[in-house]
Length: 506
Image (tube, rainbow, N blue to C red; front, side, top):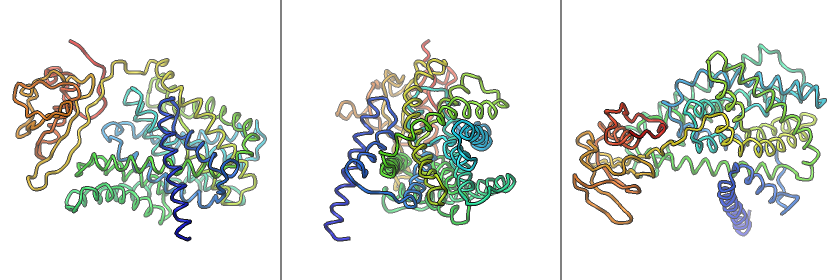
């Protein structure tokens, strides 16, 4: 590659990246999932429009898996274990038995209604049965839903990629399909080994980052994401599930008291967005738009089977033993969003040389686009219709931590959000655990050294000094006052992590 070609490639790449970021902003304002406009950027840049030629399914598969690993690491880092630990059992059942039920129902419908042979029908069922972590994380975290619902769907989306990928690999083999016992054994081995490697890598990474002082703040986020990548690669190298390893490593690291947690999560979020943009644009480049119209009717039929039969049956069958209310089950069924994962999985049979695999890719691409347009924008209305929206929910305060190594102290920064009951509280009424001290307030660009009688206002940025030993107690106290006011302790609010509940006035 010449220097001029490098400049041209970077120019095109930078332009596509900025166009995708602009598309994300437009999608947010229009209430659409960003993935649709990212895919559109790729299609427009492709051979039928601007003319970029990309038709390498093997490269798309490899890059797609790497991007999924980054997305799931970010998902694990941003998931609160306290929110999902009680939901591991139902989420695990949905991610395994639920996937199996969904594959069987979708495959049967594709075989009998669309006339597909059983091999292609099973491939289609396996490809589209996984909910997409990127789509779920992006959409559900903006809705004021009960934490149980959000946590269950998020945990399912983090866990179910692994068994789905395993099934697609099994069904993509040439020749006769393996017997069910072999499939079950393969799935169990890959999940168990991947989970063990992910948990072990996360614990090793957490211990290392807690006890090793790095020379620059920016190295902590790199090291944290690096441990997630190691988990993904190590699991893949021994034939286990790298996807489940990456997610669990991120979950362990994200729920450990590490230095520069806020900077790490911010970096991981940016890396996740970059992975999503690159992945969706690449998948948009991979398809040929002129071939898509022929796939509309099969995609619509397969999508309706999935949305109206396979997903509801799998949710009902898996969640019935857990006594989850029918309203929540109905929303969980509708919230099974599809995204990049099915399109990446559709490259596997192409690489394996399965007959009809290219048509399968077109069907999956159209299905994802059509049903993302249907499901994504309808989620807020579905939540309201089912009575799951938490009216009057307060915005939670966000606390960032930066270690002050020389003083063995932590600097906490807190912004008082709109609707928080921190507004109107005097400094002395905070009653922060000693030796925590509020040292500075930044108000409308002006710095204020507070006295005991200084009243907090909405929009204030607070700087507090505390010690590692009482930092968690200080954060809980701030959350408690933000939720229930200065009498929070008397009202039974102790500021434990999790979403703020409905506003209560008394």
